[in-house]
Length: 299
Image (cartoon, rainbow, N blue to C red; front, top):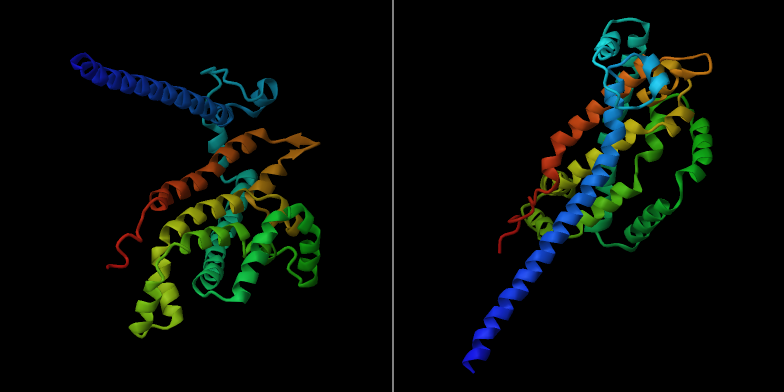
């Protein structure tokens, strides 16, 4: 009996050691796999960054390669963008158009989608459920199918070549509504009753009580909406007709023509175009995982 009792703990220790070893091996393998995927994703970006410090002709000769020649590395491409010449003026005009369009789109989309989600989530009605199902159903329809009817609609309401024509079709984004709905469905409804008992109207409850609690949802959706609007090219290309209203994605694409390609501005401008999205991510990332609803209702 003493021998059996002595062997039992040793087996448990061996099993724990084996499990620990398997777990460590799995961690190393998973880390290495995701590191490999990260390198694959970062490689083109890093190559583009290196190419932006070289003359445009080198991009034609070598493509996006990591051939580091110190004699070719310079800040000429970036200095050219800040030299107040014809190309730099056009570039910063496109940059401003994209910035304005993105800010307006993100603000209006978040506000509209928040109130739609708030209505269908906090007030359980048959009409609200039907509206929510119809909105979510639009996620199953590719934008390419809706593109021509939407364009014809913009023509009918005379919004072609206007910022409103670009913003309006995506104002009630189904994915954003779905995200807000999934976030708010877990919020305590006692907050609404507490606000009503204190004499607050429904607008005050939605804006001053529930909206601050949804800050993580707003932050996450702000990043995604900003990325989508900033990088969007197809729909603005259809709506805008005036060169002075082109966004950055459209403007940079105009630098590639059958008659000549301005790679100096294209590569450096593309690298600078990443900066605003990186700034948005760095500003809002810390709010995404904040659990600010903890303790909102005290028992």
